[in-house]
Length: 413
Image (tube, rainbow, N blue to C red; front, side):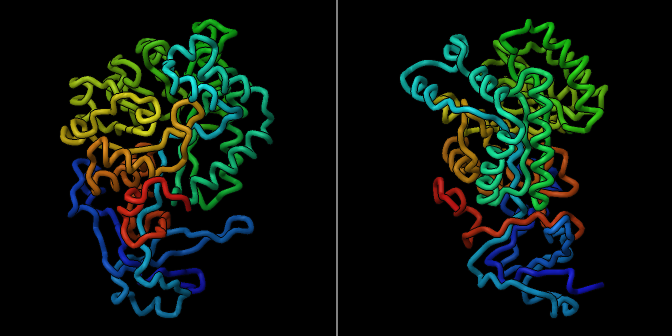
């Protein structure tokens, strides 16, 4: 063992391991599942990627006064009992790569126009599609860099990023290539890439011909070049039907993609139930999920990803979080960062909304952005808890207590 390749953080006010949450698979999390260690410490190994030396694996976690003697001479940082350490925060649903601005649409919505009305007049997703198609890969990457750095300032270590603002073969590939570039630029973070070609229908094609393009051209190329781990479909009123979604997701599975579904947001299409039956990793939104959908999701391994910032932004009724959690569903939270319905990367602000309007407890909120979010992107075996052997993805908070993250509404790092 070469001690120079190890580091330690000591005298954290608290270390939240989340061990009990993993043991319960993220379902019905309680205070006793948080694994809180007062005056805690963490030891981790390092690895070098290019010119950067970054945390690699967790080696030991426990009370500072129990730090093993064999680590006594490694480099340590003393947090002076003023900062807490938690698993690296995970934002498991974003649309981070796009160009253009839709602030005018926000003003229209504030004046009474609905999301659907704006889309029918050529706005909505299509506005961003036009701007994204016009942007070069370098321009998209530059925009994405600034957003990644903002997300990182809130303690986010893992970001799921969806395509979906290209809506044609060339532009969707370009967006996914930007995500690939981000991973090289920021090796200290983890990026999960999701193909969401079926986000809407491009104005220049029929839905049938666009589905044919996705299934026959775009998806096979993405699979061949390994540009995305997941395939997502927006199954909702005015977008893709259950039958169309099932067809796209079946092809995705054939090509080796993991599955996700934008489900039951604008209306109830029983798409959350479809996601569960297809063993998708997640069903996201769930504002209009039925009681049958709640029961089916709770009985499955599919994570329900709630996006309360979007409901807040649209002044819509929130997803039934309490029903989902009490039924035994594994529930995650995410920003849904996007230019039309939730223009924020501030995950802590999303937690404030979840606490106040979804009536989620401290334990439920913590689970929702750590282990449960990791499960939503297929990384629960590596991330989401602080345990020896797992990725050294930890967040050192600027506060002594985890709940200060959402008590301090919309703080800026």
